[in-house]
Length: 491
Image (tube, rainbow, N blue to C red):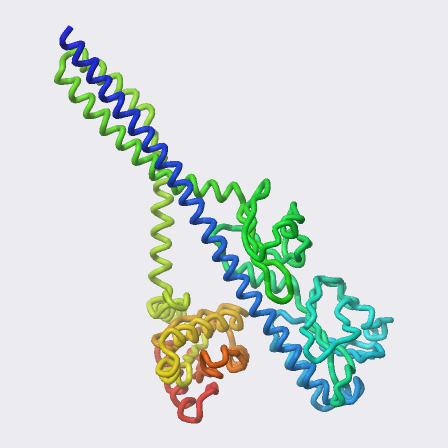
């Protein structure tokens, strides 16, 4: 009976410990799930804000470009003078420098118009009155902002585009017409989707009534209007929606995080607590079984039953654990091949690619570019501004060098290496020139950064020289470009 009493007290003690452990682990699991869920909300809000900043900057560039065009157009007397002007090719060139822009339309107040790219006679002869289009501005003043128009069907191509337009004023200060840039909505949306969020969700652009401007539809379109807030997030039946309002136009950028993916990730990251609880309870049971083994034969029988129960109930998902290890290994490999500041591939990845090109005798062009006067930027504005210049140039490089197999690397310091695979030298030079013009045109906050940032570059083909000799020649051309006055590309 004494032994039985010991067993009884032992059972009560370990039962209390087990219950306490289960309660504590349950509370910790609930708290951990809440923390992980909040972290995904924070990551999603930050991602939405970053995409908001990107699209806002893009819209500001469109507004700046249309304002610059209307200012240049204002010096002409009428539409006919633009058509017959030997400088009309400049308008086509200006259109080509605008990312995702598909057409430029210039109209006077009587309905006469010219379109770039120019239309063939059959298409141009259609009964088209620009004054009936949603982008037309019937009356405006000098300080009027550009007008952003949601997607509409283009009269000539029947494609869904949205546009930005601005009034044209002649030298007397009177409104003489309107200029509009048509933006390819799918192209801009595809550009946004290249930036991956915390989950494979969807981005869309909506107005304050929830009507879609770009991207997939939203079920509850009244939420934006009801909230009255410029940013936040809300829950629908199938997803979390995070939104951020643009300054101009007053549209919302919204990001959808599917619920099944959201809670699947929360559960997956919370399983560490479950595994810890199982391990803790297992150790508790082992101690309990050992003490019962010392107590006698009955305790041994009970210990065996408990261990069999424990063995049957503690099922750890080994394939999932192995997949997590694989994902972490792939993440570490990616981090080892990318530069932490710019997100570009690093020097190690560059060396690996050169080895692959040499072994497989692949055709390529190699360019080395260096930011002009970078030391002066660091000395005058500080290293944080220098880092911002590097990030901005890296972002522009990714934007303008996206046609074909082009790899971009941070070569070292302020130098960037670019490898054009299976691309001719002429095409590579044309792409680099567009990047140079775009970099030179970047605007920086007045008084808080350099007025203008440029770069010099050297470009050469590795077909005859070999990759390592091509790198040396590109480096020599780069320094020759510096010597000749900077802000140029030599081949």
